[in-house]
Image (tube, rainbow, N blue to C red; front, side, top):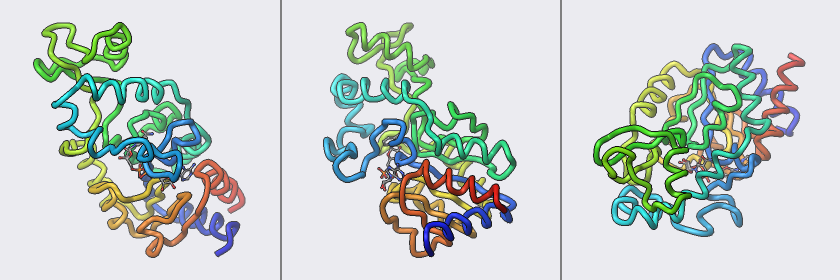
Length: 248
Ligand code: NAD
């Protein structure tokens, strides 16, 4: 299928579907300046092994080293702005053509773009919690402590170590993931955007979709069973789908 036919076919599938969901990954946010894990040359994996550094056991072993690797990076995620791909998904939802977004991202950009039903299955960078007393604080509170020289940042009440509410490698997935998995049971069409579809168990979700559109720069393990594969920039692909929808 040539590029134009793929966009038209994707638009037709969206138009007739009664329940469409999007599943997004780090690739949807690279055009907002946030590096993904696996893109050749620019992905974070070129610089570190996240399985080792971003794991729950690494955090517990040496939280100060963990914060030296991630505090600045995650503060940067919070300064990022949504791009046209996030905005297109928000618009699809507003126009009644998308029932929600399941995202592996912790950057909060879908919510910033105006999406309302969002399952952040790997957590978010809005809040953190104390590992000793369980109290909740804003991420800003944690950042101000870290920036003021306190590493690891500590609870304002009991001085326990603070931990962002993100899912690290080795952590169990939380209720957001199970809610997303339940939503997938009603899903007729899934649009995956900017995800290598290799991080399990999230990567098993497309198996439940009746129809599948894959938007990604590089090949994914699901390309063979997808109804439409659009290889390229997420923002351009989604802009192309929106334009094709207007012509139907
Ligand atoms: P990944 O790095 O494994 O895959 C990203 C995919 O996106 C790659 O296949 C790449 O080819 C593609 N891509 C990159 N830029 C693109 C663009 N502009 N348009 C279209 N495709 C593009 O990421 P993943 O599948 O999300 O899984 C890795 C894990 O990374 C997730 O669990 C996520 O929590 C975490 N992560 C999140 C962020 C974030 O919050 N923004 C950033 C880095 C990693």
